[in-house]
Amino acid sequence: LEQTQIDRLFADIGLRTQYLSDNTDNAGCLLLARAIDFALLQDFTNAESDLNLAVQADPDNWAVWFCRAQIRARSVEVRKAEQDNDNQTDNTGRGVSAEAGYQMVIRDLSQAIDLEPSFAFAYYNRGTFHAMTNDMHAALVDFDKAMSRGRMYGEFERHAYEATCNLYKKEVL
Image 1 (tube, rainbow, N blue to C red):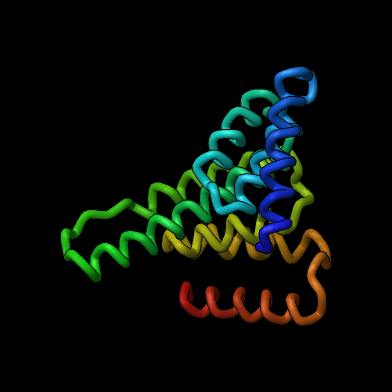
Image 2 (cartoon, rainbow, N blue to C red):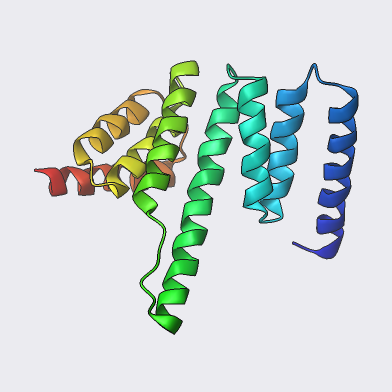
């Protein structure tokens, strides 16, 4: 991000914080918007904190659950990268279980799907995380559901998606 974009995000966070103190009726959406601003600034701790509050304020909003899953997934990846870097430099062997983080991501995606069953991208993402936890059967089920829910992907993305599904099918069979 360029400095002007960073400044704008911080200004937006300030405005949303002010709106939240003045208007609790729309807290879920305001928290979601502020969480996205934090995430764009790579502040995943504050983003996840806001999304936890947004889930409490608006538990029937599928977008809140979906975004929290994305932020949690990104947080797991950052922790894994930091762990890999630490292990290369000090060999302490300490680490955070990616499996536990991925299970939280899967739960959030499941809630998003329960609230919006036609959202193909949520099935695709959940399938990806099932595959990352070596649950290939669940991954295939979700990939098939994603494909049956529509053509939200462009031609290139659709072909890449089908190749991914075929790869996972080969591993399972």
